[in-house]
Amino acid sequence: MNIELLESFGQNYPEEFDGSLDSVSLAVTCAFNRQGALLAVGCNDGRIVIWDFLTRGIAKIISAHVHPVCSVSWSRKGHKLLSVSTDNNVCVWDVLTGDCDVKYRFPSPIMKVQFHPRNGKLFLVCPMRHQVVLVNSDGTHKLLPLDDPSDVTLVAAFDRRGSYIYCGNSRGKILVLTCPDLEIKASFRIGPATSTAAVKSIEFARRTEYFLVNSGDRVIRVYDASEVLAAGIDGEPEPSQRLQDLVNKTLWKKCCFSGDAEYICAGSARQHSLYIWERSVGNLVKILHGTKGEMLLDVVWHPIRPLLASISSGVVSVWAQNQVENWSAFAPDFKELDENVEYEEKESEFDQTDEDRSVEMSTEKREEDVDVDVTNIEPVMAFCSSDEEDNTAEPPLLYLPITPDIEEPEEGWGPEGAPDEGGTGGSGNKRGAGDAKENASPKKKRPKTFDIGLENAPVDEVHPLSNSRGNKEKGAGGGGKKGGRSGGKAEAKKDRKKH
Image 1 (cartoon, one colour):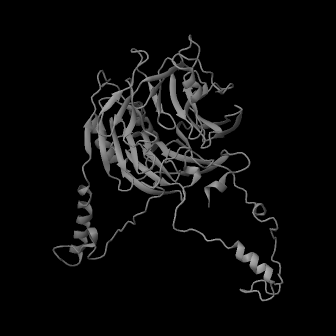
Image 2 (image 1 turned 30 degrees about the vertical axis):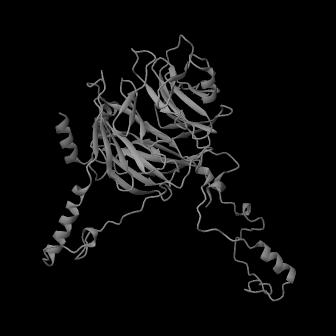
Image 3 (image 1 turned 180 degrees about the horizontal axis):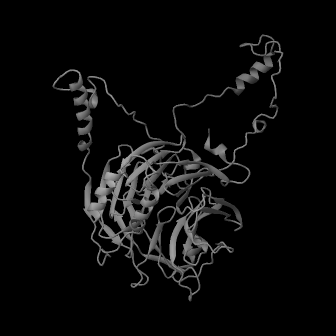
């Protein structure tokens, strides 16, 4: 179905629960690729599970880290995936092969990573209680300048096209820096001068120039990036909307825009509740409630469709619209029948050639015939930006081929289809095939490793996920999840290593 036809003429936001995605391991964070076909879920046991969102099935599992994955980010074309775990390692993964291309080791915990929207060789790293780092794929890095040297609790994000980096501190000040030169282009304070509301996150819309700032004073402020840049350094741009829960004074865990930037979703930090506002008006249109007692970890909006994916209790919940079939919208003369009706066929109605039709009708039919081009691929406008570059160099990754799992391979089966050497019959062949299968994993290429040195990095800091991890595993207990590396022996080994 053409994506352009999916635009509904009514409300364009999710209204109800539409199932869950159980990644076997406990899910912690998630991110859609740019086309919305794949969903990457970072898990508590270090694995990254990639879901095919069209079929709602697992397309690939990457055994990425040993410790919990706390942030993931897709490259523009979707061929690379950036991840970071609580062991302070940032890795770039090849999505098709599942191999780690490059590994960057940091001295302190990392809270967030983000690929540059246009340049796959640049990415942002937000360490805990340290300056934000702009890293190049060759291992070189730059530190983002500080507004206040004593304030190092920072968050940062690329704008929609990656031309600027917006960096906010714990005192409500936001700097706008050029990328990659890191020159200060503009700066402003989100509240009055007396306010010290910390900037918790900055999120940009996929379309339009709007971005939102989630702050510690429980208010979500929506700004226009063009107005912020026009205001310059120490400007005072006014937010176009201030969104908050006036009744419960909710603290927001995660916020995001819809794909068309018409709606804003915010997840509560106290419970599994999702609030949806209309951006242009600022009115609350929907509250989605998950299971009581669950805590929300992450929420993302699908880039194209009115769908939300939220994480709580280690499971990804999907929220969608209630689809009502209305076939008369496509065929005005369509009638829904309660029982079978006998239909009398008209003369020559289903004949391949109608001998009785007039010459004029056949002429009109010839004029309607159009040659369909099936060789050239036209870009889908729903995926394109207004200044879209050439797509022919590297087509985006829309789906992952699924490799079948062969439990008991036949005789003669082995890597690259070669017969087993040593030619022993019966069980010997099976054992040889099994050994070949086990020995296939070490052949993966070793990733390049870079040690990123940061001055005055808080080496003794502990990642928040590491603190809450023990409680989560106790809560998940012996009952919840099967299999995976989150089982008893593996966890016992990890605990022994930690202590």
